[in-house]
Image (cartoon, rainbow, N blue to C red; front, side, top):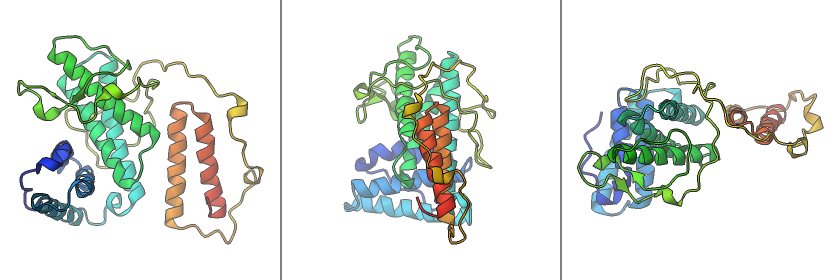
Length: 302
């Protein structure tokens, strides 16, 4: 690894946990470590790229990124954006699933709090690939709030309420934990959030990237289901389901439809979004994304 980073400038305090996560994953999962640093680099540039201390810090962080990129060589998770995005997202959801299982089973402890919080940090890093999906925004919000709520309960000797409940309070700040001072930060207080309408997650289809080890403080094997019955979901009425383009029923790839690697990557992403929508029985969104994938594969156009 490149030379150690200089002291973190005060302007970059909001990045300290992302950088710590990067350090924790240097050996466990270098790809996750790389994207945590890349997120910190991109965000830091937006915060302050002109003051001497920030320029020095960003320069050293860039050196670390280059060294890590060289170490990873031709790793597809680095060279192909769609693969890298899936790698980080799957890893984050694996941590979320572990913490959510522990929460719903009433097994409250510091490890599951950290897993919730780290999952939210990793979902932050998906911003390097573009705008987060609404699903990931909700997971991030819920995970960060759950870390706050359970930590606060444990700190005060109270028993947390398991599963999804209304969100209120301040944000968990791992930096100050155990220091005898306030353990919360107001930079993104979940008190402004509305209680999430999130059914019991079902991540049985999550594919953990090859070589991805169990996240910190989680068991090596993650249960394949939560063991909790899903909340009742109102199924959409037929008139709310988008009509399928008739031309796609008997669609065949045209000879002049030359698909590029980017086209295949976009089609994979549409299919992935459709799969995520089906986890929540959102037929409308699933059909829309499947139609987009089919049209792209058969015509070469979206």
